[in-house]
Length: 170
Image (cartoon, rainbow, N blue to C red; front, side, top):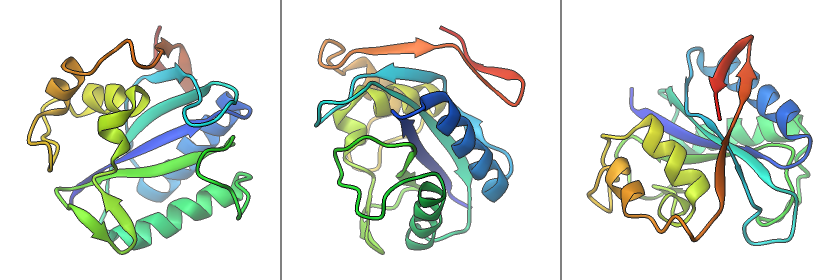
């Protein structure tokens, strides 16, 4: 099964919805690989800051079926059906990579372009999958993060617990 990396974020009742999202993902996939949790500003709109992390899973689900299941989790946790891309979110779960797949596959753009654009995606992905190679850039996520302009977006690791254990320490 291919390794799949998901971006998880929330800027409404952030801790509550990150925990709910992780619980739902664990229910769907079992074991989760987790990055640290980061506080970041809203990008693309004026809004409250987000909490973000990257979750690694193994799944046999196709990109389209995985996307449908993730949207269902988001809807169960308050995402409006008509939510626009740049808007506040209780829970946002995006497919970042699906193995080495590239291009638009079943309506999912792989790898997700935001990996190379946003610190809140690239930093936790580099933490979780440092040696893995971005299928289009041809560089490891660790190398991509080392070359990222860290002044472009504010990002801060935060303390965060899930299921009674620390998954992130500032």
